[in-house]
Length: 142
Image 1 (cartoon, rainbow, N blue to C red):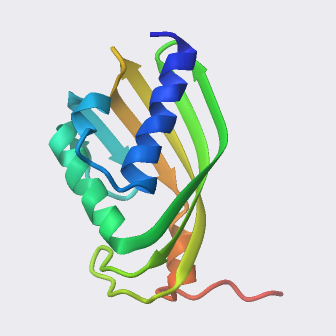
Image 2: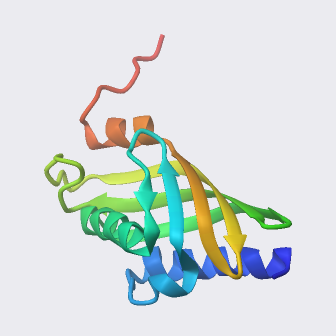
Image 3: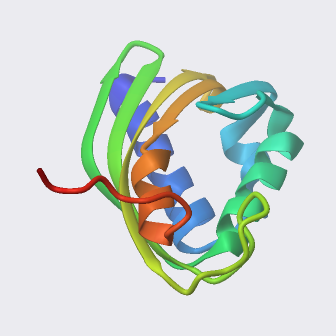
């Protein structure tokens, strides 16, 4: 597939999985041998593992929105820099719902083979998210 096709696949996957919360087509976008590397978490394996990870993420945040700041592709690699927004209305990794809105940056690096992600490296600004949830204190102005 072309770099442009791969970029389009990544955009459409985020639209379906995050915006719409529709995980019924995960196997169309995620390869059976997929491995996802999410900073601070154990690796996520396969389409089913990816689906479980997103089920947890989607349940934690209502009114999820993603804004693509940049999507760059070369060969089989796609990089998406984005902003995530949502309201914390469900449990997230043991943190009870706070009702607070979050907005944080993320960078996702994908390797796409045959139109499906086989690898993903995601770096999320979890520090900002945890500060916005009130789980850890925000830095004081000096």
